[in-house]
Length: 499
Image 1: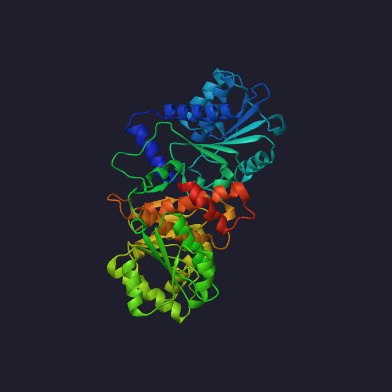
Image 2: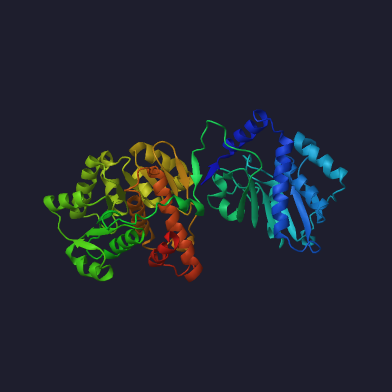
């Protein structure tokens, strides 16, 4: 698990390291430059062929760049630096680095004939950029983007907002970004994540402040180690029983995908409560699942007592019968604290029945995409896209539920302010049924921890489910490609991730 920071948080961490830990700013700058130069050296195998240009601003990011130019020059690479901006306005640290590159006689480029260079390093603006890039700066960055050279960004591509990932006027398009200490939010959200290319987080000696917790994180492959071992003496009941309240007439596919995903994610038993028209198709598609088409009070209660986790919504519809089914199970689950994944039409019904919010709580995971979130909170889609983290956090705090706000970079938030950004997955997963698969994966993850004395927080379990879902999609993309990927392909590769 890695921490993710805002520009303000990074500034505070940097300042604390200098003032409280006593590590001088120039030392941190030197470490950053060494890490960046190491990564560039690793990428560039043919030293004799390379011609490297480092484009530097006058802020501390430019100081990093000047140090990178000097280190590469001393390693034998043909390296030039170019200063963009008024030299008289250099920060003190950058002025020191400027003096050093002159002492070591690093060549200076006075014009931008970009055809001469095989690699371009962007050190113009850092994470503190607060205004749109325009004028001479915008012209230069546009020229850099048009060059055929390999492109490297120092800390963050110039022109990318470090918090939102938005392009501020014009932004550098990197093949590689070496960012320092922590990943910045702007390198998680699009288009910043795309402009950053491959992103490497380099340790330069800046760490969390003792006693202060960073509230945003992302999971990575090694976090799959938190998945508990399967109990060798268990039975199908031991591994969790999932009830799906899903599927109206003609909509059995969503129920199938969710149920199949739950079974692939370790659930011991799955029962689907659906309409009679879906019985034969579902029994044919998924003989491992049990099917019930009864909706009366006693049978509902028996199913509630039987299950460990409930999924409400995939293909459910929003008609009167669907409304009654969803309300009954959501309200009773709230009374007994049974875990619920509320998805799809469950969310659509919630959006027109505001009074149902009283049934939400820490036992509920809601999984809206942007359109569903718009209906739930009354915000325009564009406004939500402008503030994904705030929207997810606000809804979690309002309802006390875990909010999984699905997007290219999914945000997972709880009422305490803890948040995760998901960096697994790809554009091929933007396909019908992918969300239904996620609801089943989340149910399966909740089942995994039923017998565990020590469990992760609900928001971490939700983040783990989202990560696994995306990782399966990444494997599917490697085999079938993104263009032709289906929700079924994601299910197919869940077992590869979990084995």
